[in-house]
Image (spheres, rainbow, N blue to C red):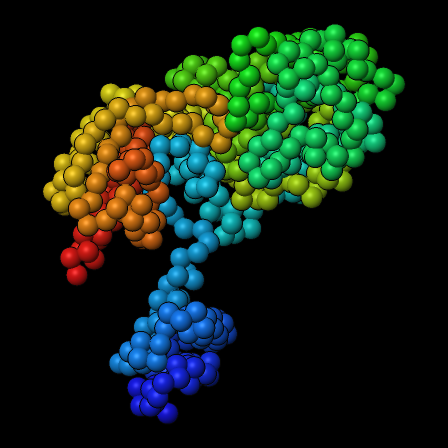
Length: 489
């Protein structure tokens, strides 16, 4: 019996269609070709169960359900559910949140040429663990190690899936079953409740805390050493800073102490600031973060940092240092579990090659971080005019952006933001509508308005030559126009 011919009676449960009945509906049958019957069956079960729950909660009666079922209602309901299902997972998004390295939005967008190299590696065979000259097997990150050496002055380098993995591998390879010394002021927790003490425990390392939260001296490290000490560790503070009456051990002191006692030293640098002579200086903009080359020059054996933060490449944990120390990491069984795949390695190689070629300032994350307030005001004015033409109330005011992802804690970048109000939606409602759009747009709500920060917009073509990126500004305006159209309908 067709849903529209069912007698409503007074019992809404009697109107609920069976799953097989949903799948026989002409509007649902039309969806099979694109998604498959198995997926549709799962969604049909979800649809029927959600309606059952609404009845149980008293928010759906027989008359309302009857209305949902008439005139192709099942096909429409399943189509909406399918669209919701497809909207989940990884999709391109427009970031106007003002957080450049936004973890929720994938951190650093890679350069178009880097993306092309990653695509080429993904869609074909590639030279990964074979020497093309001799035909013999080699190391998959041999080329990356060479490139990192040219960039930061390391003897050797390897890459793993992220910097948390780099920290875990370093601790396991250099100190498993023994002791590692770390300052109490560096026992940090980063996103996802990832804590240094827990990483050490997972690596099979016995942690020895020295110093105080705000002050640690080299004598504290030396006093904490025993015959079981295998690693002296420094850790980037990530999302916080300790200010005031403070002191920390200089890396040169830590490296010298390690050499004196023949104990390895390591520095989890976190953000991965790399400066080259051909690049505009970024360090001052992000609060004086330590450069990777300077960390290595201190004599520390191992320095690890993120590939997708200030370096501006794909997600990775990059480990550089002495040949002896890196060899110990490479020989550890964990390395095989944590190593990067061909797509990530292709992206890392391409990113470093761009920097070495003098094109580092084309990397999207650096473009955003280096943009001045004067650079951003013309973009803000263009957006204001276009949004006002669509009927929104817009005001430009001075605001603050953030580097994000713990790369420069406490640092804010001055620049214009657009304060947008919608006559038909609350700020939270407008933000929700933007997130539900295609592509989704992520802004921030502050007080009685929605804030749009132009710093984090990708631009399809720039004066630096970084073309081939999505034109976020144009697409952002299309999304706002579609919201106006849907509100009018």
